[in-house]
Length: 438
Picture 1 (spheres, rainbow, N blue to C red):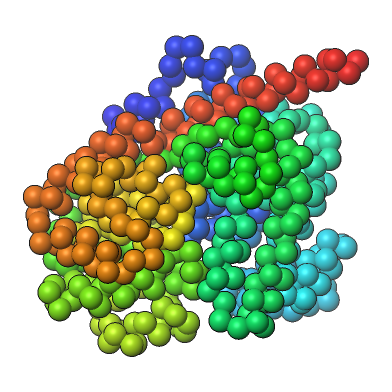
Picture 2 (cartoon, rainbow, N blue to C red):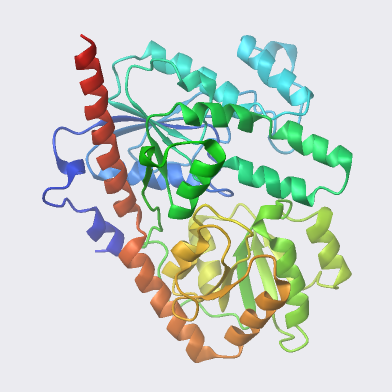
């Protein structure tokens, strides 16, 4: 039996195993399973809640999440304006269904990002028509006006981290007044999210760092925020000695064009590292950098043959890729949790990570379960990577300690149990309010 399955067994006195099973609506306005954390969160949390005996239905928009068997998906389609290979497309006239579609297109045409608002409106309408079918509604970071009405069940909202953090980092990276204006317009939806968050009775987040950011950036009272750590599927993400280790391989998960992910600093670190370790090379799980700072850095340092991008691979291929690396690296300037760190640690691959945001909560102490460096410091990254590449015993020790840390603290079964406990608290509070109003 895997560690994940062991964690999923019922525990005596566990609130999630208490009264009758719950009927849960789990909402996600974006469920891409190959990049970003939202699709990963929805897939694994829904599976583990179902293993606990609850009835879970996911309501989602494009890109739709990939779900495990037994978890149904109800599609609430948008106009899919950002799909590949034609992002920012203009829909045909016969694609428009109602005023929400018109709002979605108008917002895109004026440089904004409409999906949190328009998904919330569609979801609110759908839930109102199904009033009484769910015991609890769980929104995954939409924070849209459409979810503020009476949905017929208490609302729990996950905020992985405030998107205002991304907004500020993108503004800091903008090189012109025009680019800064474009960034402000794109992130205009964060004003809505701040207003909505302040009115929510219950917010769930994934780390203590994110909890503090939610208080500071979104104005939510600390006593309304519950921290429930997420984690790795430790059955899938596990060591496998039969996978050959590739000398010099460093792997990272990153979106090349997102400053928050710090990939440009890792590319610079690789350039500093290669004179001493000429076999060092980087595999990036994410979109290839066609232009921008990362592509420019790769060209400037002559690293075209030393940096590879992979995208759209299967879960098993991704796990084997991480297993094959001598080092996994998280170079982010900020993370609300860092699933890639937990997943890499679960395979026993040693980790080099920055201290940005909640990463230290996941990765643990420097020198014990990882090597930790300041965010944005390419020199420190290069030094840590070089130290690990040159010390097989250190790699073995950190890899073993890292997996032990994940097994103890960060599994999806634990996340589901903590989340279900919050559901029951919210249902009880909601019932008490309704009873007092009679």
